[in-house]
Length: 141
Image (cartoon, rainbow, N blue to C red):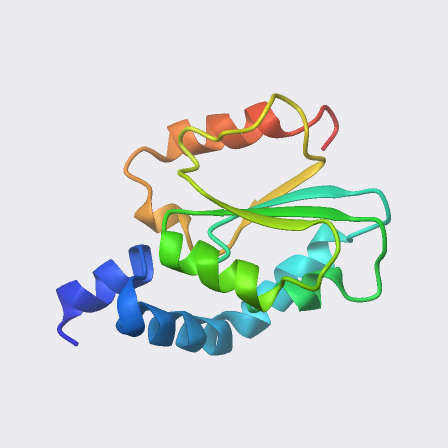
């Protein structure tokens, strides 16, 4: 793939190339994601929003050994949402939705943890996305 096509697939994966790109991202970003997951200190009762989960391939690692956690992933790519739903269909309290983090389709203060890994450089106006993340984050979250 040429650099523009590669960048487009990383931003919003589509088609077979997007599915392949997501698998590569799972491998290359695994250690970074695992470090972020450790910092999140996931506990029973948490309500977590991930911005840009891709195909959700790393979600089982986030939720391992923890019960009673509600996880939601939001991604720009409908293809990735579909893949994530398929991959994680057996997990309890896990959902994936299509949308953009600059206009999150959630009520105020419903998540106690919000995170993203390798997404901020795709945001045209980071302050708008961060304001939305703060809006859906509960006080003290």
